[in-house]
Image (tube, rainbow, N blue to C red; front, side, top):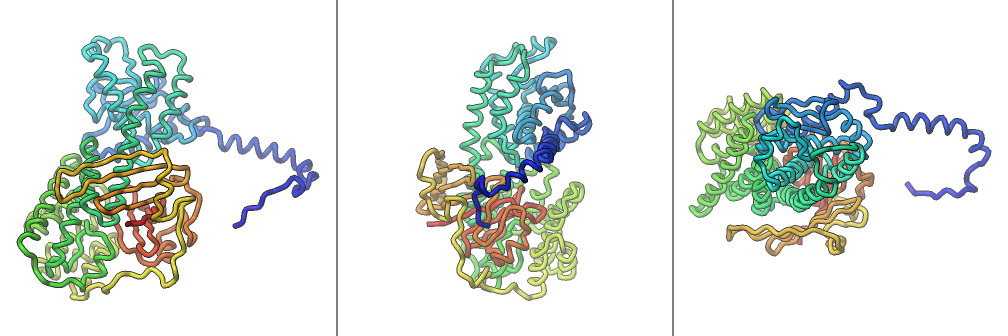
Length: 551
């Protein structure tokens, strides 16, 4: 649609005069509608709203320990974690203050994530936001010197901010504005650092986060582009500070995927598609596999990768024994290692854990794994039953394995998205593969050094504008340039796709995807014909997209 500027002469002045009273009324109504949500909420509704944000944070943290109970109080100052009561109290006044922020949920996540970080970070004392303590605990707090206090506050900002980001909140933008508002709202806060001191703590933590988050995003892009070794290095780097179940699981998937590359030369293994092996291109080319066997060096390399993947999945499971993907992926690794009994046991356990968690997708993947184990043991009828049970939740994964069991491999060749020339794609001023927008400062750069001779060092340059988040990733002699849409991006692709569109619309515009990579927040659908990766959430809606180019 063409934009058209409106001149004063374009407007009928009599229309303005006749409708001025109506416009005043409309402004009044809109003021009420757009007023901070806290003004119209009861105490119970405020607590429910805070609990939703809190639950998302707890899910992102992925720790098996039960979280503290959340309460909304009027007797605390800002927020406080009580280890002896196993609860976190949030001041109702600060909830109302968050409601006046541009992004109320992100502001809430900054506070609640901070307090959760004190709990999960083993900061074992009562810790109010900013170090203020009740008088009866002042003696206990004296055992900590100033350095320890500031270190724990920075850790809470750092960890809380990262898990807020994983939970889908823009904590980096929200926290500085909230911090300033808190110090203006609370006239007297005895025991708190000054605003300048508190801003220094937050600034240092956010500086670390601003360097870490691009590594996480680059890891996801590399995983989607089958750059498995580089992706594993990114996730390993993050796991040094954040060994969460998802990060460890991602590191394991990268290694398992790399192991599958040579293992596809084994005709028996090549028949089936494992739940962590989600790339559509590989599925389509099943009948192209040459049954040439594996040499000893290749088998040894694949074995080492699978053992590395197993360690990652084991650690993810240890972090959260109720995390179904870890059990599913362990079943796949054990099957590839030839330990069928362990594979079957973990697939059964994955079914139980997924059932308890009401995780239909993981339960379906567990059924697929059971089918693969039974098929490789020549239990054809049991395998067919397991694959059938996995449908429709496992979708294409179950169907392809059923076809393979019946001796009908999937069609060969790459899926062709369209016969029409692909129009040039861009996000604002950034075009796919064009590194020029990344060359103008300001930008951040971080280098990851590998200890393995087989894995090249990685340098990641990141830059952010209102429209896009850009990455220039140098891996050995390869350069990957990627641009992703920012949250709330209102533009469209060259073919008319936008945020909120259905996956079906994307496939009607771009054809079948080349690859599909599973993610916690979204699945990544890659379309090589357009140089694009669409992020699709659990409801099948587009939440954003990435343009990429590889040189």
